[in-house]
Image (cartoon, helix red, strand yellow):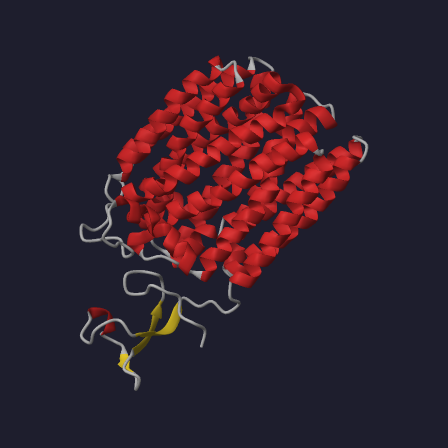
Length: 454
């Protein structure tokens, strides 16, 4: 897996991702503690609303960033986003009101919504080989996992020395270091004639919506969105309610919040390490659906744990549940980039990744406030049961949407292309006057609808 780091460009981009995530991880712990100071036992509702604001920024900004990605140099977009995030992070220690938390989160995450899909679309061009790209996806997942594991541990150490407000300084340093590494990388350029295959007349609005059209028309991408909903249902209880579970239910100190988040990160990291070998033998569909179907079971166990007395045994079960949620989430999210890549033409990758980013975060936009408000109003056991039911429905929906037999190359007919069209060079005429051929099938200008199964 580490062989991909021999590529200098990828090595610098991966380094940028890592240092930015470490800074973000410090901010995550500090924001949770800030919310607890501002709202006490209602911190889950405050944090849930703040994360909903974050999702609004992601859903609204990412498609616009995808439309810009093919027209603005990616280096400029990435560096501008990092510098914006660093500037906002500088203001976070001075937040004293709940509404200020919401405003800071909105500005910070709007910049992140421009950064992440641009970053994701660059990687397939840096590492075009399927094996290298799979390793890069696992490395990216490991970066997120190490952030979940290392950043909370670092935060716990720093909290013994400094007030939590100073953790935001680490966020600023991470974003500045990320910008410097992006500047030092030599990014590949798309061919000058590489116009997005889904482009139609209509300007920026149509370009921004191109990725969403890909998701609507491609069965496996619709299933991917359902799988994202299952992950969001399980992940929401981790990211929104951990501080309430640890502090209010188990009555443990602030450092235990880092331990619980670290358990989630450890489960995810171990899964990401194993996935390249697993995916070499097992299909993306089998791995992702199996993991998604495990999430409702873990959430049912979480409901039982939070309904029980807060003893040492219950605490151990909670840590195990968080680790299992991390493992299953990683098994769904890591192969997601492979699914997007095989479902879009190269020119459409920025739009496809932007749509995946936006649509997947719309799932979190639903589950984050649901986790916060349910925990505040109905209690943690009910929250886990409701989110578990949502995860189960989403996983079953994905299984129905994603065909069992899903090859890249599909036979299909063309009835709307004239004879002599370049795309019909290897096609054969049919008695009905159509043209028939078989090739890797993606939605583009020549293929507007998914072909019906034979």
